[in-house]
Length: 298
Image 1 (cartoon, rainbow, N blue to C red):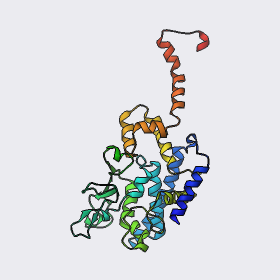
Image 2 (spheres, one colour):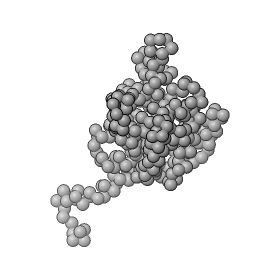
Image 3 (tube, one colour):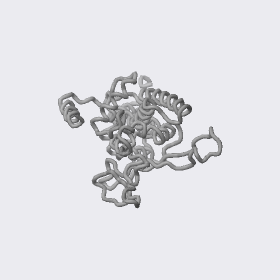
Image 4 (cartoon, rainbow, N blue to C red):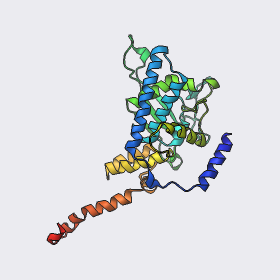
């Protein structure tokens, strides 16, 4: 069925007109939608954990949906690539213990590095069980590692950063502690991928697109493919930060891109903004020439 769906999607994609990138969804609208998902996820998971010290399947699914929406739209950090999100491995599967020596368990079939752990998250810091009394704040933090991304074959280094504390970290910890196990329980202990379908299967490019369409049924904005969220982010980000190379380079790195790619593929309205800026600044330009103009120019 998955193979058939993939073939059908490619055929439809080839026959349908391409979506114009000028019709990208406004980033504030995307963030408002994600905030609603996050609020709902935090409410339902807190209620479940307080009663049963775990989460129901419904809560696990809602929590994962909020995480993926946040990662895709760049709500708490620049958006990560969909291929990276699909290939992240749960920390408990980073090493292959079957041999008894804990060999690194990288899932990239083309990887030749013997010590590579693949795309994954790592949790560090104080755990809730370290506290003598209950009710204390969870002080654990999460690091993101993606040695395999769009440009890693071109010699670019692994993408590494610490996820900021806040809603995203809290939701990820719930998913790591409870959600992943609940979602994949029908498959036993063999599903390594961190994010999975409602029935616990690892995502392919095709099944993730269908999953995204399901998430977007809760949105008050028209459907858009998940890849278009990167375009919306880059458009707003470059407009906000102007010509700040360090900011652009850092955000582009997290997305697995270069600034050159940003300009060519994800920033369709930059030319229009540049044209308007030239018009707005033209009076200053003429003044710099020593030309005062007539009173009609004022």
